[in-house]
Image (cartoon, rainbow, N blue to C red; front, side, top):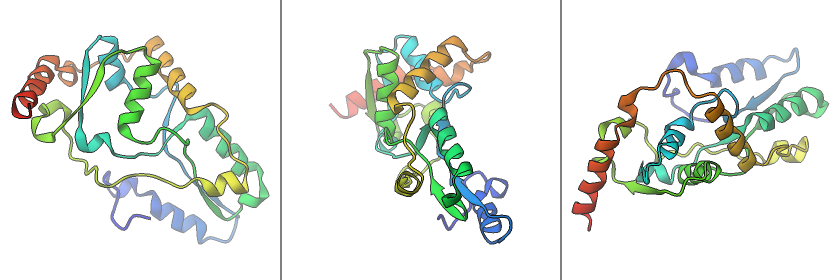
Length: 205
């Protein structure tokens, strides 16, 4: 459990809800800590998929973010976990982490998106100092967001009903069939990305 507020502020602090629910003896409660969910309706992979579909030969990735671990789950797998928790008496007054087994590292996540998209380019890790402004953020990637899902697998028999890699493939297919209505060109400044790669290559031959 984190000791500091969510980076999104007090209104996003789910930990307080957990404490209230689990400290109330009636009715019996179950808490599911869900991962970042992908599948139909989710556009988060789009920032990578668009570059792949635009046939970019490379994608720049903050080198610290490349090794960052993050818990994810395909929507049907998460739904399966919810059904198990809602229909099993053993889940009463328990807390369960939910996430797919793979992938977790950001570099692997993008690689699997690329495989699903039949992309033949390369992911290039770049020092933050060389990244163009539109690829920078304020996240501290020294803090991994990983969860242990052993309890729900052991107690409730949770298993992925859709293989995680198949879930990524389905997500890619859905985004391609339902592209976002609006795209900010500033988020896909390819000339700036080309220059950034050139600067790093010249500095680190």
